Image (tube, rainbow, N blue to C red):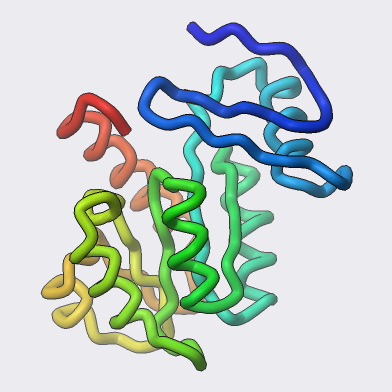
Length: 173
């Protein structure tokens, strides 16, 4: 059990494996979002699953925020591959959904880079895309593959399964 207090300003998030300080300037900042989630759900940060969406489509990012947020995920988004790679290293998400077709760097390059890095290789990555190249995704280390349009119940189940598989195979997440 973690002790916490509802707060504003800077929020220090710790789950025993990582510590992240989120600075806050606005009501929509990550720090305020964490504080609201903790206050509303009365859960410790260790019980919150951080899901990072890397997709250049703002409509898809918004859908992921709303649909997965309803199911208890703390969803963060990155609007392109470069921002996604930075966010992975900063946020240390529990699970990632990744689009393939992006302008600056495609999802194949992103997953390849993340799987080469010892600090990120164990994060489950679910490819969520219109392209149906499952064999390539699995060969590069994807946990699973979902084609758009997304069936939200299926994706939620895959994300929950990915997080559970991490919990059972490692001591620290």
